[in-house]
Length: 131
Image (cartoon, rainbow, N blue to C red):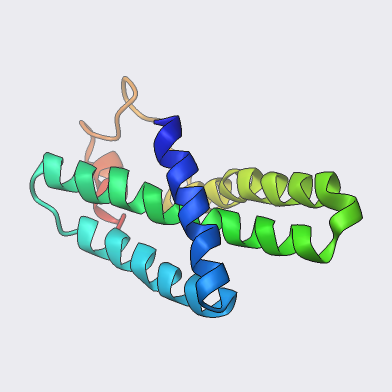
């Protein structure tokens, strides 16, 4: 698995050397948005895992390295600080927006039954409200 990460990181860096970084980021952003959209229509678990688990992961790996590489070029003496800020932003984004989305979907803080939001009509209404 670490081999895949190394390949995608290097592929992202290679692409920005050949093509402009903004163009590469725009294309990759459209690609990973399309994989999420297409994966939402998958009816078979293996197709979903292949598309969302593998393809999406590879594309995200490429998009992650582009800002790191570009920031390291513009701040050569502050690489550790810049990389730390990028990693912190990558990790804190889901934490902050995860709480926001949970509060948006479940505004009354209904507790699950045995870990699931099934078994009660009110809880199932929450599940049906998730796009």
